[in-house]
Length: 333
Image (cartoon, rainbow, N blue to C red; front, side, top):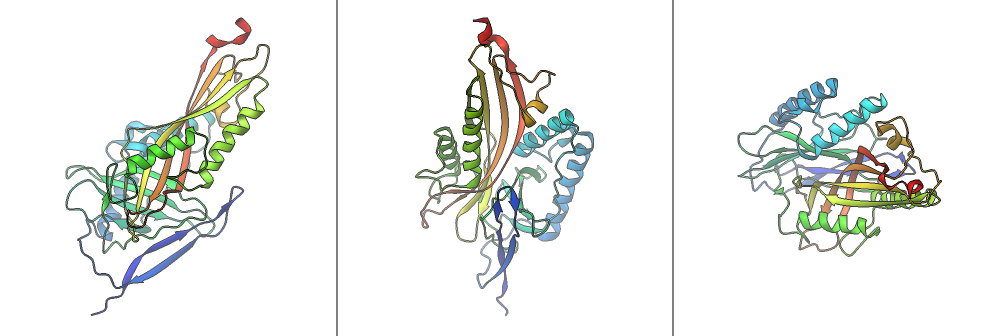
């Protein structure tokens, strides 16, 4: 009997100065036999993803999150709704999201929830996009729960669809930390202004996040202050075990950029997407402005046997809202 099978797909990408370099797909061999039955075969995965895509296409056509139903949920629903809001404010088209199956992994759980990971790469010049679908219970359909791009210089190796993987959620054990503790540690690290910590290795997304806050604060210092604060959401953390025993999970958090004009007679103005998202014609900050973003991160958490630190291997963020408060206008003090 032949023991050769596809063990998984290792995805690598490189990103520098906002440009994408070629990504690489590597197919590996294995002699490991499946110990559990996968929840879905490729044909049923294809059908599940097509059903989600039909719902997404309907909602995208109308720019209406009310059309999501049970097919777009959790962080994915909040993220896409935010993209609709920005498209309506700017007149821009929404970012395309291809849900057709490409590089797949599925859970092999006897219970629920169950999950599908679909890693898509449009071409060698594009960063791969990781899409997480979940079936919450036996009566629920598979739904898109999260998606984001992988970061440059990162890679993961998934178990083949014929083998399946264990499901991972907020409180799953067997890793250097539970996914919930990992997300809390990451948000704490952001709020402390650190690019790495005892729990997390450094990554490009975190560095850019902190650099953006620093740059804004410096450029607007003549008028006031700019600060940031991140917070976890109530959305479940979802993922599966990779071939090496580590966990790959998708998680959501929000963060706010808080603009505060504290110097009388000064001028503080919003710019870029922030100004576009503001519903009024006047983009000057008279008192304070609060800009909210929704972020999705892919966290790779080593197994307890491996040891080491967690790392962010994928991330995206989208602007959600802008609110103004003129009550603290220093000109009226």
